Image (cartoon, rainbow, N blue to C red; front, top):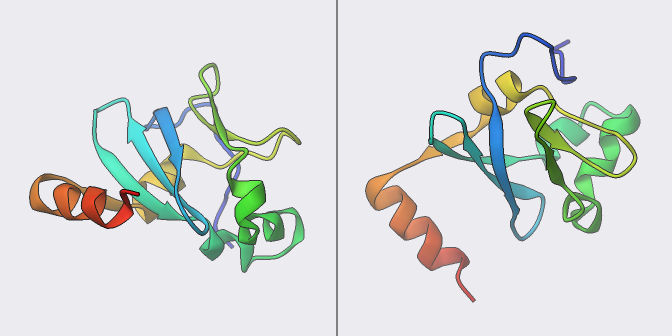
Length: 104
């Protein structure tokens, strides 16, 4: 089973998070890359991760600057390396299309 908790020696650092409709989050990493992560994929593992299937729960996400990853009020966190590798990169035309599709 894949590790989902943050590691002290993570190669990637989350700098910003924006919750999106459903269970998606847009993350900006320290290297300035943008990635969209569907947190519902982690919810399928069950246990405390099952909360990630709830969009209202996902909206409570924030960045813990000290830890370099995203966290929730109940201290659930996710490994930034896993988030980086599971996320869909956004740049150029992909980013413009994404913004247009998610603009209100």
